[in-house]
Amino acid sequence: MGPSCSSWILCLCFLSLISATLSALPNKPVDVPFARNYAPTWAFDHIKYFNGGSEINLMLDKYTGTGFQSKGSYLFGHFSMHIKMVPGDSAGTVTAFYGKRWWDQKQFQDLTPAEYSRLQWVRQRYTIYNYCTDRARYPTAPPECKRDHDI
Image (cartoon, rainbow, N blue to C red; front, side):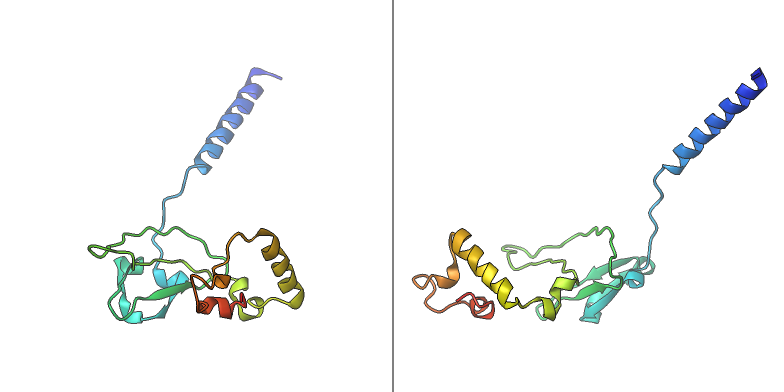
């Protein structure tokens, strides 16, 4: 193997290294219109669009807020948000992300008799406190206790 062959191999290795390095650089983020991946679910007039639809402003007033859902089944992404809180006690301000997943569907919300039996077994052995059965503090059971068959 002569000097010219080894210089070709060295040059090829160098070009491969540069190619691998450049392909590993992060891509610049792309502004995508909100409506391409998301659809408003209620109070459409409480969503204002900016910058060609790539930014939105969700408004909350004393009557309603607004919501949106993903158009894709397994969509992921990054949310950056600025929240303007109400002055004083802002305990009533709520933000939430709810996924539309298989376990949210009606047919998966109710337990089969076998599953309910297993749930009861776990509750009997591992529950430290159950407010649904605390009649001293709650003479009338809270609505979720009746709904979830906890009483």
